[in-house]
Image 1 (tube, rainbow, N blue to C red):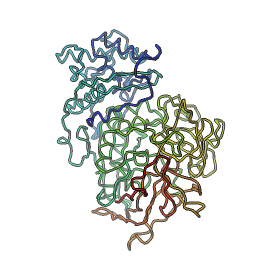
Image 2 (spheres, rainbow, N blue to C red; image 1 turned 90 degrees about the vertical axis):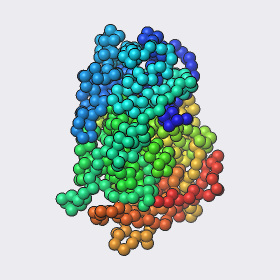
Image 3 (cartoon, rainbow, N blue to C red; image 1 turned 135 degrees about the horizontal axis):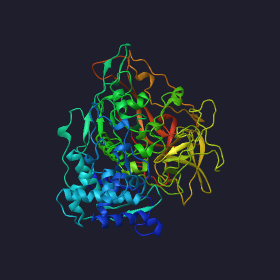
Image 4 (tube, rainbow, N blue to C red; image 1 turned 45 degrees about the vertical axis):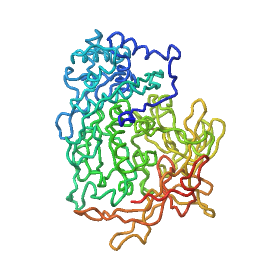
Length: 632
């Protein structure tokens, strides 16, 4: 499989390979009818639509680029967000909707072509798809090409439909479409319809022009992506401190173990100003919502200040995605998901970061470094980030790896149909509109009316967890793996922050699948093991002149008999940031080993000397021993 094809594994939801009730084939028939009417191969029309929207309609709800419907047709008069007003240097951003004549997927031009009011294409799925078919046919004619039944003849029209003026980026887009056509796809849309694109294995891809020769030398990106550089400052500040990152020599002085996924909770232009301010945080990459454009700010070898945990910063790459977690349909575009997945796949391969949910983290999975800092930790990218789809794009699909009735589970709800209740998207306490989610909520008993699990770290005042969209106190996320603590009917319990936490997991609507792997449990004779938000070196590892960092156990109880999944072992480390230096800050590297565990919604760390490693049912140990520590 080519690199492009590997990034195009679609989210499979158990839809039938073909057929189904007539109501389930409505959108399927819309594609067929529009393709026939405008003499566009149905596979091309469906492939473009999947890349534009994954066949979702979201009637009347535009993306940040002003795109509507399954074809993501752009109405420039509705694209008023400042997020697409400027590029990294303040100049007009690439693919910013301007006059409709400049936008290949222009909604108003499509309306003229099919003889329908523009408003209908914003809300009517059939009109939107017809408009997309008409635009593809018009592009084909403008290229002087026939309206052929052979999909291969439409490659240039598809590249033009991408809307980018950059030839290599347009070619990458077209290859994504044709990779999808080659392998086929099916999924359940936001309207609950099953849609199928049959595979066409004879379709060929074209070579895409590399972007590397066009980039600043500081940029690290996959060769097929167009990436910019807008550097973050490493300078002294007027208050005697410095900012806004640390010089390092990674991975030589410190191994990179994590990639952290953020969303900006701000418009991109303001974030680009923030990252240039030495008194503000920094991160390695920003990704624009409207077209997935990547801008790098900090060299990967250096340590950005992005996660709220210095130890994680020292071992991670931070990627900000333009968006607001309470408005996922507007901001979490397919273009952004795909560009991000390409970037993460490239970085993970280059730096040896495992493609699992204990190493590809959301900001909301990063542990607080101390007990007092827990309430202030961030909660992005939130419950509406589609982790299952994201890992499909990474080429590392989340799936069952153990028996359904085994002693470990991986959280894996069907995003499109799993719609837990949330409040606070528009106003505190007000229910959010139903929406697919990666999050599964946890209760104290196997009963829908039982209280939610209480998080003593997030709510030290003893307040109960809530259904608020920002409250992580009683939920887990797709891809996270936990030790089973019990089963009762359609309910499964897991060990979670020292508690037995229950979630509904019926066979007809599973929210978790069987998993295999390793767990840790307190050594015999220990009633409780302390857990930490960072793995620090032992006292003797600190050289003269470098102050020892105080330990701060988290307020969670890892008790005898409990188990937590682990996917990594490491040695403690600390970066000395006591002064501004012209060379990389020294790394204090310990000898004591730690295990990273999935304690709750966030990861945590325990000393290897406090725990025993237990293999789950069906897990085959590489050598019958615990995995070797991950060296710096």
